[in-house]
Amino acid sequence: MSLLICLPDSMQPRSLCSALMLLDSELKIIIGPENVQNPDEVEFAVVWNHPEGLLLNYPNLKAISSYGHGADGLLADKKLPVGIPLVRLADVTMAVWMSEYLLAVVLLKRRQLLEHAANQEFVEWGIAARHPGNQIGILGLGYLGKAAAKVFLNMGFHVSGWSRTIKQVNGVSCFFGIEGLTEMLNKTDYLINLLPLTKETYDLLNTKTLSQLKRGAYLINVGRGQTLVDEDLIPLLEEGQLSGACLDVFRTEPLPEEHPFRKHKKILVTPHNSSSTLPESVAPQILENYKRAISGTQLLNLVDLAHGY
Ligand code: GLV
Figure 1 (cartoon, rainbow, N blue to C red):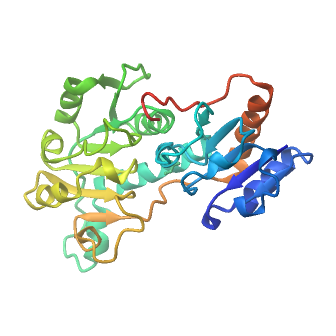
Figure 2: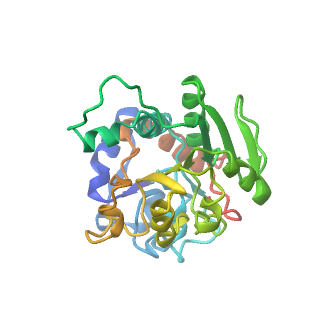
């Protein structure tokens, strides 16, 4: 019986295989569906961007794991085997990297270092510059959102968070529901999107919602590109409602060369690298879920199909 790894080469499937083998040298691991000789053997699959319908080929599959925090890619497959549980990752290293990125971007903006980088011929000396506003608003209070909130709180920021259902997080002003969203946006200087992509979050960041932010607010999107309405962002930047945006995720990735986001002076674009899945860090939880799937016990980080994440 075996564990199938089906990942693009850029996600280092071999490194995941080695990290799993280090934990349990008896494991039988197959890298890539093209190397499956007997489909009956596959009991567990770890996937990212897999071909639609692929997972129907394995009659003894007991669970499928996304190789990221997001489950949207997995759920985009309209031909998933019915009744097979889906899990995703919740990883401490990914949370640390994500928090690091978010803090770096907020500090670059706050201390106006991006402007300095673009203008090295400045003439004024010794005047401390700081973008006004101290309020971070985090959309999505899951594993990554909570970790980032902690980092900003430790740095002395005020932090609010918004989630689908009511949550309590130490030191964070928590909001939920549509009214809660407006209330949180009204007081936010730095908006961070970490929401999963679902029917409810698709197009959520648009002219209406972004206009509810404090004037001159800064947007950071590290969730999914489809949550932001691209055409609405540029007018908001031009007329000053938003003072800038840092975007790591896009509707189409890689972001096309000719996309207007690439050339806009107020937009910082990064190549979906705010965080990434590190094989050695996630191998223990993948192995744990593999064992649980085989023994029929409760899986970790189950995807809730009704809510889509
Ligand atoms: C990355 O986008 C992830 O879902 O982990």
